[in-house]
Image (cartoon, rainbow, N blue to C red):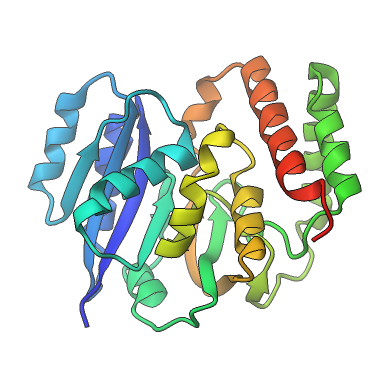
Length: 273
């Protein structure tokens, strides 16, 4: 049976990349109907997006009242477009993703999943280093670890130390054996699929964080509802990291990290599950 799959992205003054990713999506082979949903958080030259009309791909441009950030923006686009459209799965993605196989979407969505599966992740290789960004986390962080993370994000000095340590740990773990796949705690936020029921749960929570902490928010809502996150490494994509967040000042990022972490700790770690 043919299904509708929503591919949701957020535009932040990267209209050329939005169009390029749409062209890349149109090369995918799948029996499903793919709808490319673009949420315009900020757009300097909307006329560039008219190029999407020339692609063999259905697309929809959604304009929110303000910049909603990555996850909240993508969810806004899904919710707005799907008011009159039935769907089971939506793929939320950065636009700096390259699929290594033209059957990526087919492999991901042309199958039946257990009803308990709410989130899907695949192998996501950093183009610069070849490092696989998935799984984002195998196990749930402890309350102590989350509080330490909040402490590190509390000022610029600790924030900078945290990311230097993170880079060091990433280099140490680079040659470790990769996880064979299956159920995990969280998958990386650069590209992942969400079930429509998870979209509903996220819509009531995603506006509480801005830009950072999305992976943990998703994982916690899946856990809270006794559902599962599934990682499938046999399906692969490249992450080119042409991120628009590189234009944002470090001080603003630090505040966003802190605010998101505060919300996550207060919402999910201040009681016994």
